[in-house]
Length: 416
Length: 159
Image 1 (cartoon, chains in turn brown, green):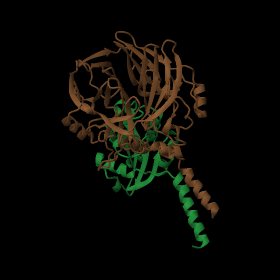
Image 2: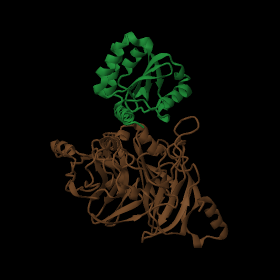
Image 3: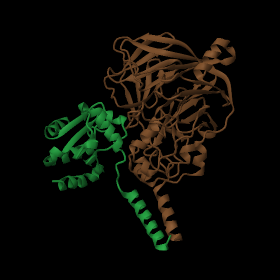
């Protein structure tokens, strides 16, 4: 009888992936002290006329730097430059030799020049007004990994071919050193085990055209995933570079991890009052089922972007609360549109100093763009051809500076 | 409980577990039923004996998988009255447009250009064959490229 029981248990464990204690611990929101010194206040709405031939924003590749917003849309192959202070839109016309493809990030490197990242193949594209686009294909990286299949495949690649996937919206240009910071992950690292030590941020020297350094191996949920597998969505991250500090923000992790000069320096929780338990990695069987991945994208709680608001010296992070994924007719609901979305603020000592709940239905995933003192929120679903409607411009306000009426309004809006 | 009965019960449980780990079961019939009913006004719960061959074109318009499945269907025209082709995604971009046009002369073809199927839990990421008999799934294939000969054999055995 004992043998039967052992066999039964072995079979049961054989069908399920192992979930470690560390992983269980990491998925629960940590205890933090919340104080309420800052909130968002709806300040304005902007309607900027679009010159003829410049497309409206469709929620694709874009960047907002120093309150100047650049976004790209293929055909008519232009990069729109929006000056939010002046309410004007201009454009950079892309050269004829520009090849459309899988563009992931933009960053501004001069008045009329931008750098773009292209995935598959991984490349940097420098676009300067009235000049040809120059393409720089990124060479492979010697990742630390225990995955022997990856290592042998990687070794068989020529040196000038890449062995990684680039992240969305994770490109930073360091003008002094002529270097770029890129968020990335080795091919298949989200799917397969053995990448616990592999680096997820890389610095590329534009002058020497070589990798300068790589760092930021996974921490937290990704580090403790065991035999489980993360879908591409669950392993996404954004990278924020501020001086010599690099912050790594995983969408499926309660903490932010930071690195000084490329060395791991620590982590801090950045959560919402509403944060829930995060999704566990998928078992190998679940990972083969597209509906399990859809469940994550439509239902599971997750964080999105992480920002620094220079004028107020505050960090912010958006949290998308969990939702019932299906509507009454058995269809999936919109992934993000009907979720409760919160933004929480940390001061420079990484203490929670405020939180705000965006009005329901106002904010799609990545639909809030951080300003140096607030946010602009877009709904790219019904773009107009003639104007850019920024219906919600929020400013971060210290609560003690608000009068009673304003405070009541904010409290009501943020449901705190 | 007598000892032999306990042993028998464990054996059945073990066999059930082994079967459960290995058998390919289609877990999304409700989602597929809802999709067909709401988007195409077809009630598959009333289907007596029919095959739905679903090919997604939204992820890969020109890749080998679509090519192999289309070739298989081109060869299997004897089963045409028994098979409905369900093509999802934007076919305007597909390099196989000509072939699809020819196939739709032979098979009943439903095109879901707007990819409405994505809103329903159907387990669709690769081509799927669903053989429905008396309102339930008799056979299900999630068709990876190496499974094509197996699918071909299954269709030929139905002749």
